[in-house]
Amino acid sequence: MATRIRQKAEKRAANKDKRPYAVAKNIRMSSSKVRIVLDQIRGKKVDMAVAILENMPNAAAEASLKVLKSAIANAENNKSLNADNLYVAECYATAGPILKRISFRAKGRADRILKRTSHITIVLGEVE
Image (cartoon, rainbow, N blue to C red; front, side, top):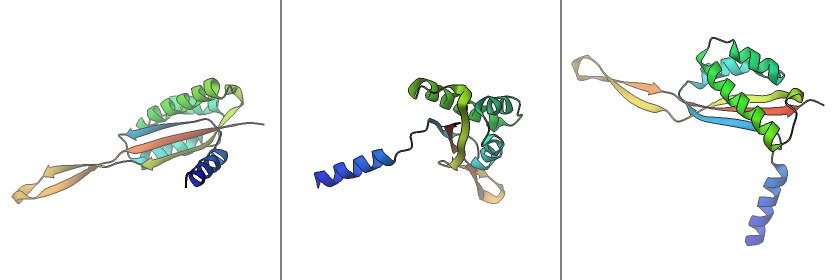
């Protein structure tokens, strides 16, 4: 039993993605709004992506910029990569937990308000 667990752990470690990345969880914004911003930077070099996000008026651009800068810092400090050779390989936003609230209506009724959250992930790649 213990040998099988060890083998599975070694297999997971061998298949693990070695690229630098950063994740921001529970951002108080719908993931569909964040995806619009992330579609603009996918595949771009990091300096171009930072420039795009700094000049976008969307609220999701600020949160995405913070995650992108974190991913760049992770690449430089943890993986010893040069920031000039990096590009945005993957970026996606998934739905997080939903905060459920109540709005009171006429005649004793109530409407449910869904306050959505999202998780933002940015994975960087190195240009050969």
